[in-house]
Image (cartoon, rainbow, N blue to C red; front, side):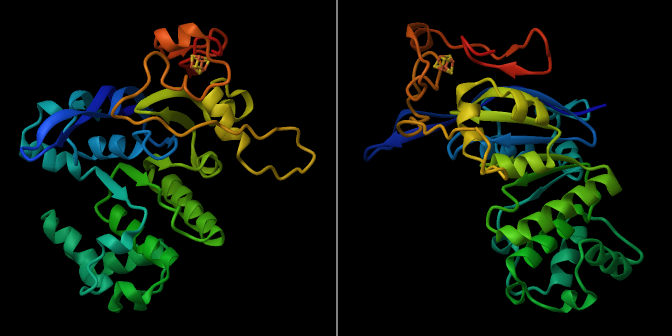
Length: 321
Ligand code: SF4
């Protein structure tokens, strides 16, 4: 069952300069992104900083109003909803941030932080105390957590509190925005396993945003690779790892450390920096860094097309598809 659909989604930010702050251009942060997700699955969104993955998450969360295109949640077009309907729909959508510490009020105890979520959303619970105790146990923390303040916890424990807060109102979709990138490697796998356990127990759907393909591989059913505001490849997670086609995807894959030192996967070093999203290259946006670029790549933008043998594998490249 499709739970979330994004259709040709665009988000442009105006760029202003001068004393009168005249608009001088646009940042094309998100430029025509489309996909659909089934209930209970995880779509990993991966790419370097500036590729638009966080903007995508924020448009889905309703934190940014899209410039064009549509977000459809449980069959309802968000742009057609009034503020009351959006507020109600927002209950089914929550976020887990990179560093929950920034969003945890340092003056509140963890109990107050968790209670506040119910109060803000007008969710009355007869046994709120029992519910909060159960919540904190579900994410692997001890009951005495509730009387403490955010600064008394490690990064991993704070992320568990962030997860408890995100699942408190029983959402269906969670946008995980780099949820483990600020954590030590030893803690990362514990948090990822907790997310997977919760997904199986409650049937959550995750949009999992990360710059790290090896992390995304661990949790995702499908993966979309983004570059300069666009999806350039999308397929099942294993398919991307076994048969990545786009030269950018293959460069990202080549940077993942291999457990087998005899592995013959050679590291591909990309030349140059990611171009500005204010002035993206014409044609294929990756042409300034692609070793296979030809004239057509500078003239014509490749469409995201289905592979003939595997229609669920989409690639935007004139030559590798
Ligand atoms: Fe490289 Fe051309 Fe393919 Fe773009 S379209 S990824 S520049 S070969």
